[in-house]
Length: 246
Ligand code: URA
Image (cartoon, rainbow, N blue to C red):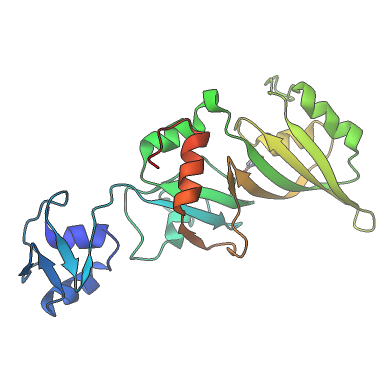
């Protein structure tokens, strides 16, 4: 693999920044200065250093984003802004993709990775990765109404849902809407909105606050993302029944 490609893939910098680091003599491979970005290296076995720091090979990258309203959950789109457009040029890689999908008008926790196996396992119906949403819903919803979700309701089009748990957070009397928290164990199209629809009401704001064991990080503003911590990643792999290395 070309060393400039390797350094960029390891998020050392943009292609221009990498070129400059090489030109200015900051990069060595197996103790020898690198003078050309075209130099071939074996990422698994060659020791590449940026000054005194080894640049270790990393195959998979994992991020948590607080998806904002107004962008679509896709890798690219001809007209609409996607979650991948929110990545900076250093972190962006064209093999990254979002795990699952949030509607354009939904915000909240979204995992983005290039680890296809983990994504597949997290989304597999067999693992029932739990998702928690907070929804603002028109009108007054009662605890008795949402208790019905526990039985596994049937949507208007006949789709049978698994049991879900919901609670009332607050009824806002003056504005006439209810905040509810709802926990689902599957991911059907527009699921929360359609569940609320069975009550004769409408979701006006929807935010995912938990995906499996991963909570929306405190302080991560809508539109921002950060790398998952080791602890968060290990917990997500456990959610997906994937092997973890301690
Ligand atoms: N349910 C919905 O209706 N929309 C989402 O984006 C996620 C869950």
